[in-house]
Length: 290
Image (cartoon, rainbow, N blue to C red; front, side, top):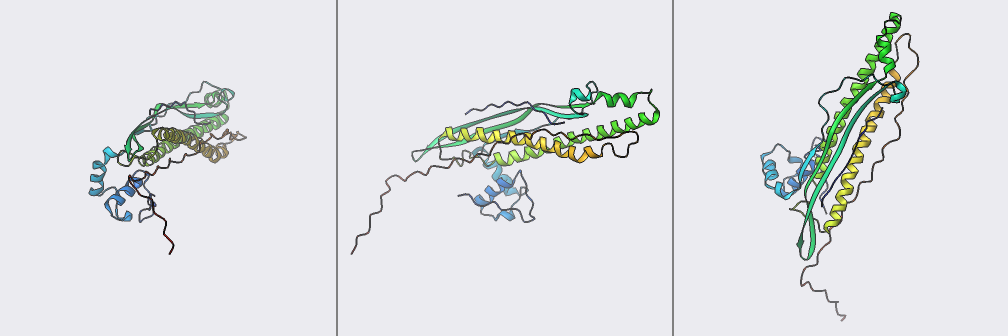
């Protein structure tokens, strides 16, 4: 069983080394912004944190000079009851726990001229998961056998135990999906916050920044797909060998079938700024030999 997804995207138009905090922990939401605040304020990086009043004031004062972000990655609030309408052959597995969603992506850029060179910046970016839905299936054979009173009681009880274990296993999928999606939301916010805004435009043509953003956001889309797939596969490998252990009258094991890993697109490189020549700059004259 693997997460499923539907996607669609739309679009419009030397840095200091990052230092970790003193305790060695990283905050994916604020670290990049705290790096900028440290540089702007002159306060050492290991002495600033997101709870300081100075950082909060800087954050609000400079919000108009940075890209406006709308990052909303949500998952359904409730886990649905399992459906028992399909057989194992119809499902392709004994149980399936799927997370379905559509990806909605958009951005807008603008440009200005500085010293005769086109500079561009990101005005806003939105990245959202829409129409999110959990789907939950347990094979009809297992459900029917757990409720078939014509079976010997010891056999039926064994199938009831199998059914309960599968329900517990399936619910773990949904908890993992939520963890993966929340982590990706924090990662997106941290990365997108470092894009060039109005206060620090990039000295490249606007079309180059647009092409970069298209590739950059497509990378995160495929990264989320891969992370959901891997989380699913890791749980199957860990849990499937144990699902039938210790249950009398039942032999065999559930086969792990993760399927091929989704392809993750390469992360693109940020375009390099074009350095403008100062107006009226004179060339150095060669030294005369004595």
